[in-house]
Length: 311
Image (tube, rainbow, N blue to C red; front, side, top):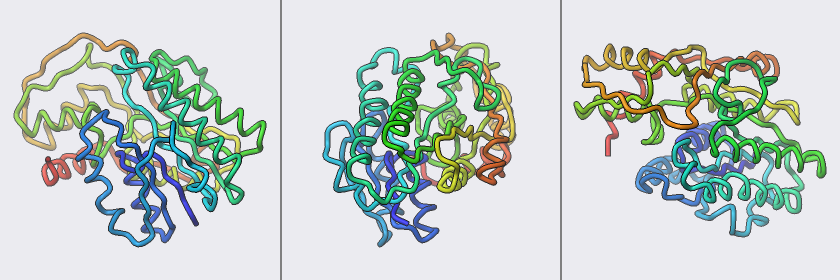
């Protein structure tokens, strides 16, 4: 099938594109190289895909560039492009709003007009739409507590508007704390691993008792591809099999690395979620998907990858 992946140079988008190519699909990737983090990291993420004959990459901005010609023959769209990160969203709201809401609207509009072969539009959202306590199934109330979460929920609602008005085959996936090789450098586990590898202090925000249901990137990718045949106009939580707080992660990394770093406690970050754990029963029923990678195995893979690929 002909697939379009937005945010293709990112952490999850690059893994997803590689897996789609391995399964024999044609992939068109889009990324604007937003300077949220070092472009060299994103270029490295793309290196495998760009060597593949069935891959076409386009550097463009969903907010401003012409998209109709890119979607006209596409059968499945995986919309991962977004401005990530909780903390920065408090000080750069305009960028979050345009990257997460306006860009989604522009893509939906192009699809409405110029994508007659569309089978599924898979929109990637986040547990942040639920708010401070995001533990449960898809019936949880959506009460985001950060501007980032607000813009991601707005993007979801734009998808539902186009689905209702134009019958677009929308499926929404809400990811929970994805980690693994290539994780963004600002994300917690990658920051911890970087500090461990350099024998530097590990900075923990708040009391360290924030709980996450962690999703290894290969499990996330498997669920995303399974959503190609999901019932339309549905939302699915995509999460891992284990809960852990920050101190649990530090202990696991100590065991994996044999390193006991200095710990520095810093103030709690505004908008940070307190407890997240996805009830993925619905995804199990409709996508025939279950997470496979344990937290210890996943962190070990991320640690080993970091040692082999450290910039």
